[in-house]
Length: 335
Image (cartoon, rainbow, N blue to C red):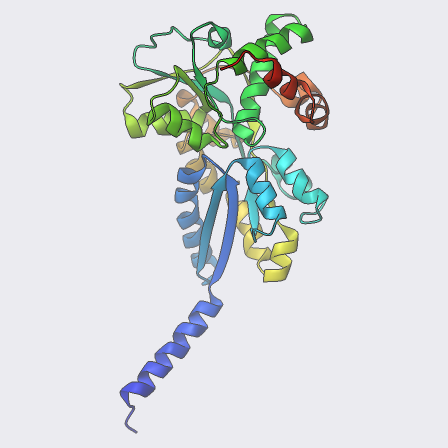
C-alpha cells in the first residue's frame, strides 16, 4: 500500500503529539540568585530521570525575591515546587492551603538540602578597608543589599548585622537597633532582589560593598574577574537554610507529584550535593562537604533560632508592620 506524503505527515504529527503528551514539565519557583545553580541541576536531573523511567522532563524556572516569589505562587503562579531561601515564604504557602503542614518532615534537614550565609564583596584593593560588619556603618561607606521587605537575601543581611551587633554589645538590644539603623542609612538604593542588587553594585558601579550570599559572591567574581572584586568573610554571619517543598495543590491538579518529589530528592543525592557544593553553596552531605571544605572560609555561624528565638519571633518583633525593621528604616538618616 502506497503511503502519501500527507498521510506520513499526519502520522508524524500524531506521534509528536503523543510524545509531547507523555513528556512531563515542572515549574520551579526559586529565589533571585539561584539561576546558575539550577541551570546545572535541571539538565542533570532530567537525564537521571530519563535513564531511570524513560520519561522526558522539562524543568522551567521562575526567579525573583524569595518573598515576592511566594506571593506570586499564592496569586496563581503554577509552581510544582518551590526552592526558597527562607522558611517563612514556604509557611506563607502552607497558610494559604497550597502546601501541607508537614512539609518540613518530608525531606531531610527540615527540608533544607543546602545553606549559605551573607558575606561581602568589595572593589579591587578594598579601598575602604572593609573587614567586618562594624566597617559598614562608618561615615562615607556606601553599602548595597536588597530590600529586607521583599528579599530573603536582604532579610538575612539585616538579621546577620543585628546578630553581629548583639554579639559585640553583649546582647544589648538598643545598641543592636542603633547599629542596623546606621547600616540601613548607608544603603543608597534598595533593589527588590539579590540579582538586582548585584547589578547595582557591579554594573552601575554604586556602593563600596555588596552584601549577598556566599555563592553569589563567588559567581560574580568568576564572571567579572577576581582581580576586580574581592570577597570578604565577616567574623560572624547568619546561617541561611534554603527550604524546598512540593506545592501540593498544584501537583495534585497537574498529576506531577511523583516527579516533583523526585526532583527535590535529587537535591539530596550525591550528584545533587556535588553540583550544589561546586556552585559554592554549603551542603549537609559530610563526604562532599569535606571534599569542598577548602573553598569555604571559617566563620562563626549563628542561627535564627539561637539569636532570635525562631522565625515566628523574627516576624513578630522585626518584620511586622511597625516592627524593629520599620523603625530602623524610618529613623535612619536621609540617604
